[in-house]
Length: 325
Image 1: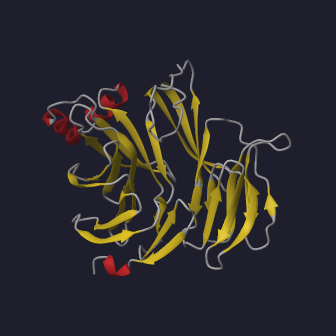
Image 2: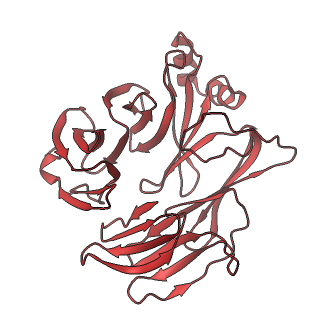
């Protein structure tokens, strides 16, 4: 796993047995650690990592001072259905009388895996730095599929339109009700709800047609009015959350977006990046790297692009000239 600080000064990397945090300005290692399965590197010089249970230590999110290496263990994480996403810790647990759902054969989608419960669940979000509960919500009908994007502080909840939970949401929204009536084939179509990961409040709703299930979502995240979906046909699709319209599609399996600079960066071939204007979908530039890409991230103002390749080489590029003036 890999995570970079918002200011692009620190990089956390972990393999199966070892991990560490690097100072990208100096190019040296600040911490040498055992493996971790979640990470957050804050701008104030602290690293928070989800460390699995060992014989001596329970699973917890430990805090490290990157300036002097001091470490403090956090509270024990009780549930195996808890997942750290940057500054957030997401937990799903059963309400009364839940039914476990088996893992679908061949399902390679990277949402919370496995989907532990099929319906009547409670989801709760914590601040991974303090373990303070931020919000919780009960889903008495079908449990949603979930994608969390901590850098944007958003969360995508996804159901098939045929699900009871989706029907209830759609029927309560006149715009979505009319849009669904215009959709010819509903098999495999999606209902999305985008919420704020910080407080759980709704940001917007969206219906997505899939052409009788001709494609499946592999990742979904929202940035401002744009909802970005990557699918199993090696495409990146961009929708307007406000209107529900498809703004454009490009080939690629991995994408990063800056809301500030309105840039969309997509790996469209192995080691090849294309940069687009997020609003017009006009291509702004092509970038090439010697090996495939492992991670993409814009900094806060969208002027710099962080690229980590699979050979663990870091590039930080000035892309300010590509943004719309």
